[in-house]
Amino acid sequence: MPTSTRGLLVSAVAALATAVAGCGVDARDLSSSPQTMKDAASDRRGTGGSVAGGGGAGGSAAGSGGADSGSREAGGDGSTSGGAAGMGGEGGPPPVCGEGDKQCNGATPQTCVGGTWQAGQVCPFVCQGGACAGVCKPGTRQCSGKTPQKCDDAGKWQDDGSPCASVCSDGVCSGTCTPGATQCSSTTQMQTCTNGQWGSSSPCPYACVSGSCGGVCLPNTTQCTSATQVKTCGTNGQWDAAATCPFACVGNSCGGMCVPNSTQCSGNQPQTCGSNGQWATGSACTYVCKNGGCTTDPKNVFITSLAYTAAMGGLFGADNLCQARANSAGLTGTYKAWLADGTGSPATRFTKAGGPYVLAKRGFTVANNWAELASDTHQHAIDSDETGSSLLPLGTGPCASSTNGHQFWSNTYSNGALWNTTASCSNWTDSVTKNTESAWGRTDIQTTGWNLWCHGAGGDLGSCPSSSPLFCVQQ
Image (cartoon, rainbow, N blue to C red; front, side, top):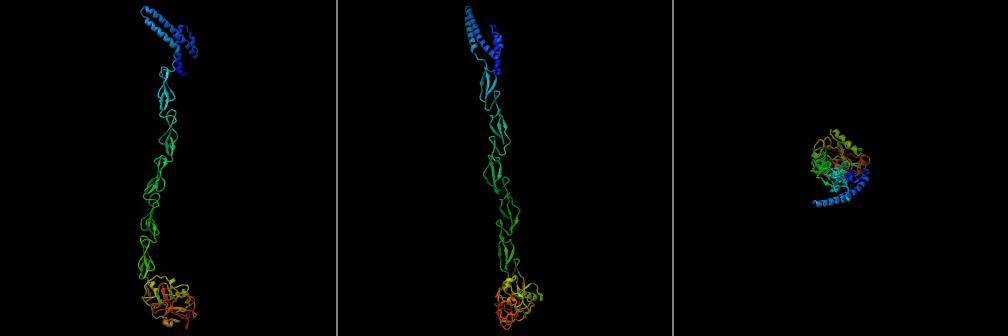
């Protein structure tokens, strides 16, 4: 039994004891234990009812006496009151709470009215001290920003752990990213976080840098900054420093086969490199092409002032004979013999770069360039020696009668190629064998046959033991 209820019961019993003391009730009955007091009170309520009932009867008598004095109606009322009091004393329950007290029954507040608990409206959150309280239902969850919260038993929100790294949803950490955050999914694409999840990639105009679109160019693209330089776009969408191409920058990338505006010679033709890195060929030079342009580079030619047998020590020995004659005449440069055998020929040994080719000490042009020199027709006969003298030594041998001695050792075609591998007197080392064939050119003509007028063997002296001068050409 609640303490308040027990106190009320004791007070009621005490009042009852006082009221019925005159009826012979032993007050010691009221000093017993609560249960005894309760039982005694019950007994007394029965007696009191009788007394009250007697009073009612007395009232009835008083009513009778009152009839004589004209007040019977009042007596009758007393009888009725006595009877009601007697009945009440027998069946009425004691109060269970103090008037105005409050308590909670679960989530329902209760107020004591007339000794009994009266229920109010169910609280939306919690009931405390007989009144609704709190701001949440215990056990429910919510997010405060990125911090999870849980409602405690008092209906108050409490933080439940540290703030979420990504997103807080329904009071629980979830997702892989912070909503609204961005990241680069590639060097050119970006993603945005929605509901804690990365969305689809979207392309940037140029580059994705540090989670957002930026830059001024597409990574790995290139651009020409000049005819010979190219720059490359880095992963940050910015142009790197320009680099020099091996040749040219064409179509925003290195290419071509030459540096724009550079020049070179292709044979006797000058070439200029265009902006596309390709060679453009110009007209052939009259004389010689050097360093990409037409110029002159005069070269001396002459017939040696001395005649030699075929044993000249090979092509190298013949070259030395030419060089010795040039040196003796004070001519500068390197000289080689227009002579061929199985080891080489003018077509394979000469530099072929020069022009015009002129008679030493005389200056008459024999050929403007190598192409003319190595052809069937010259502008002038090769008819003077290293000193410029036209008094040349006369050759001997099988062809002397047809050339009138105006001959030189040759064994070549007009283009400088070898005529016959067997017509060189054992590669110009044999001056004994008579019947070995050889070939000679003429010093007194400038047209077809100047290089290979006659070939033969035998004769009075034979071919290899015979003697003839050499045709020498400055390199």
